[in-house]
Image (cartoon, rainbow, N blue to C red; front, side, top):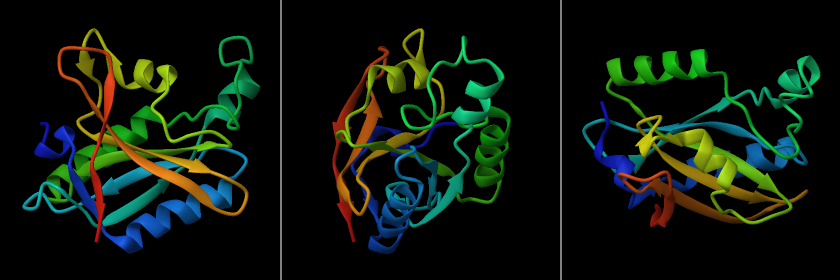
Length: 163
């Protein structure tokens, strides 16, 4: 079930934001990805993160025709594992509120590929918002929160406050 966090205007702790940035720098020049969680009782609060494996290179190696891009241009989260993480978080009262990933050497925009991955038939595929980090070799240039526009396959930028 969706929570209020899919509407955006979220608050992330400074320590969690630093964890996301560190992950983006550590995986550079590949895209990182993972989850940000928080207490169900505080829908807008993001206070923990969990790294996920970017499986783009595995898929590319197995079938480069179907998956022509590598982790340097794309991220792929294991959907079965993601489903289990979403379910476990919901049961524990600490839902996944955000899926995050980085864009090496470009901006923190929500790409058309990102939109196609997370919305289909005008429906949000996962009950969460999305953080994109613009990563460089030694720093993160920008961080933006994006949310689904209901009834469409598009996303808009939203406010992300750091505390």
